[in-house]
Each structure stands twice: as structure tokens, then as C-alpha cells.
Length: 100
Image 1 (spheres, rainbow, N blue to C red):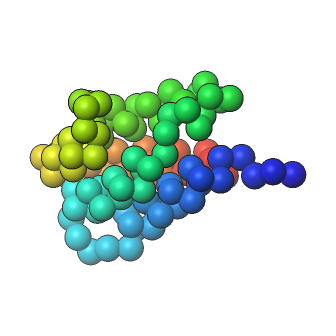
Image 2 (cartoon, one colour):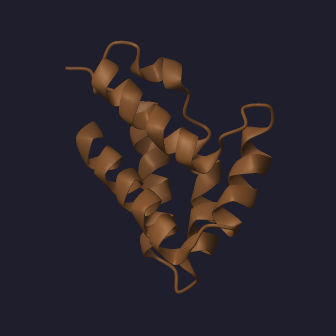
């Protein structure tokens, strides 16, 4: 049987690993994980509206401005409080679990 969402799983696995495997601040880890997360497109979840909504929520928290998502996500994560960054990191981890 074909694996569902192989690209998204690969990218989110890399993001979760970045979040877990560093002693840097949570904001710095989110900045590093952004590259992997932003490599996933919302279109990958067209067959599952629930996943699409959850992914959109993560994107909204990382980058409100869609013009240059990577740059905005970097700036957004850098200015998050620790608790805001932890919430986003938890959403990323939960989303990865749902892809399994």
C-alpha cells in the first residue's frame, strides 16, 4: 500500500528532529525547522480537510504574510515569546503524529 503524504512526513520528521535535537532556544529551533515545514504545500492535504486546516493553522502562526513566507516565518519565530514558540512546536509535533 502507498504511504500517505510521504513528502510531508519527511519534512515534518526533519522539523521535529530539529525541534528536539538542539540546546538552542525554542525560537531558534523553530527558525531552523521553518525550512522543512515551508517545503510542504497545503495542496498536499487536498484529500483530508482536517489535516489541511491543521496545517493552515501552523502556517498562519509561522507566517501571517503570504508574500515571502520564509522571511516572515523567520522574523515571526524570532519575535515569539517562549510560550508562543512552545505552542507552535507542540502543534508541529502533533501534526507529525497525525501523518503517521
